[in-house]
Amino acid sequence: MPPSIRKLTGRIGAVVEGVDLTAPPDPLTVTALRDALNEHKAIVFDDVNLDHAGQERVAGWFGELTTAHPNVPAADGTTNVLAVDSETSKANEWHTDVSFVVNPPQATTLRSVVTTPYGGETLIANAAAAYRDLPEPLRVLADSLRVVHTNRYDYARPSAKTAQREEYDRIFVSTPYEAEHPVVRVHPLTGERGLFVGGFAKQIVGLSGSESAELLRLFQSYVTRPENILRWAWAPNQLLIFDNRITQHYGVDNYDDHPRRLNRVTISGDVPVGVDGRHSEQLVGDASHYSNVLEVAA
Image 1 (cartoon, rainbow, N blue to C red):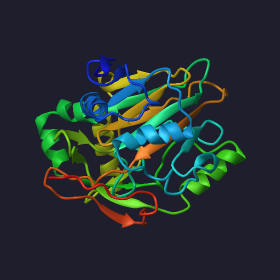
Image 2 (cartoon, rainbow, N blue to C red; image 1 turned 45 degrees about the horizontal axis):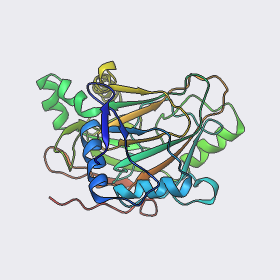
Image 3 (cartoon, helix red, strand yellow; image 1 turned 180 degrees about the vertical axis):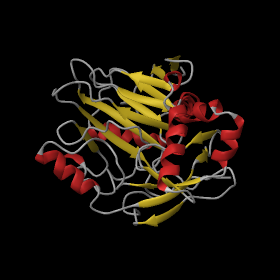
Image 4 (cartoon, helix red, strand yellow; image 1 turned 135 degrees about the horizontal axis):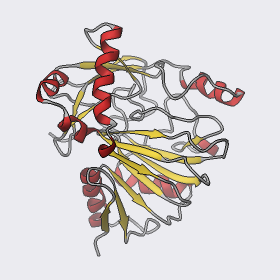
């Protein structure tokens, strides 16, 4: 039987039921999951029974895996798993994963390992809906712009308050990366246009820092409109998959000092393409150790 897909909001998110993630992948099921991800941008599975290897295996249904991160070491001796752990980092800023490399991941999987008694939600925003919401003059402007993303930008949180978080921040920026991307990215599978900005976006090419900040703030305000957002409250043993090409996400730091851990595995992506057909470019750093480039058929 095909998976059961239940929408969570009008614009983003769906719960998937009727799929045994521990079973060998069935091509029809994998196609149905990819179709659901294309349509809903984020899909959630309840009551999963996965360890590191299981999460890597399910992520592999969608494509070749990246390593854990260009700079941050993998968790527990793995190669592909990044611990999103409150002890070391709280990513309370809107962003698209690893957008400072030329080919950011196409998709991200998050598995709940330690959940909080309250708070700790992950917000996911539909950047395609945000683009469609723009008035036409702003869409035309956005279509024409390029923006530099960097891991040295004002990302994640205020100054670290513990030695662990200071060390994490140091490692995160230990090798600098910059990539120039289109402000509007064309999704290679659906053809949708989405605003490709977020917390790593530093400066729009050809504009001053202050001009860039004002324009990025304006575009970002459309991404984070409440109607574009799925607010996912975690329970134990859940798996969330979102399309990193056309979403942003935010881990809400609203759970006091309770421990929280999600394990992240990401899938290698293609080089973004703008409305004009121009591809992204790596300006600083070589992230080939992190991810191979996905080749997408025209």
